[in-house]
Length: 216
Image (cartoon, rainbow, N blue to C red; front, side, top):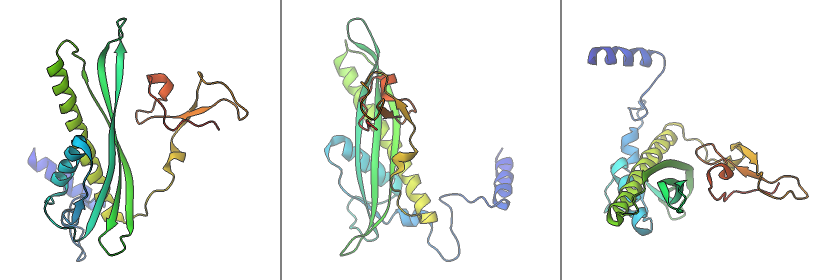
C-alpha cells in the first residue's frame, strides 16, 4: 500500500502537482515556516478563545510569542438552528452554522492588509431536552468541533495565499445564487430576493433568518 501511494505521488509530481504544505523551492521559505510567523489576535468570548487555540495549534505558533511576521484577525460566530420541530414546539436536532471572516496583516508601524477570506461549516447534535447537562455538554462539544473545522479551513486558505499571493477578495457575494422569496410582498422592484446559505439553500427553505436579504 505504501509503495503504491509513493508511486502515485511520483506520477502526480511529474504532472506538476505539488503538496500545499511542501517545500516551495527556489530559496523560498516553506509554507509551514511562514504559517508559524502568524500571530493570532485575541477573539472574544469562550467560543472565540476555542477558535484561537485551534488556530494556534493548526498554524504551529505559540500563544506567548510576540508578532514578528503577520497578525491574523478573525471575526467568527455560531448560529444555532432548530430542525425537526415537533408538535410540542421542541426540536429533534440542533444544527450549528459556523462562520468566520479572517484578515491577515503585516507587522509594521502601519500594518497593511495582505489577504482576507471567509470560512463556513455545518455541525449539529440530536436534542435531549430531558437531559439538561447532557445537552449543554453536546452544545459545547459541537462548538469546539466547529472551531477546529474553521481553524483547519482558515489554515488551508492562508497556505494557498502564501503559495499564490493573490489579492484580497472583494465583493464575492455577487457569486452567491439568489432566489425569489415567495413569502415576501412584492415591491416596486419586483419580488424580493434572498441569498443562498452555505448549504446552498435559501433561508425560506430551512427557517433561517437571511441577514443578506435584498429587495432588488
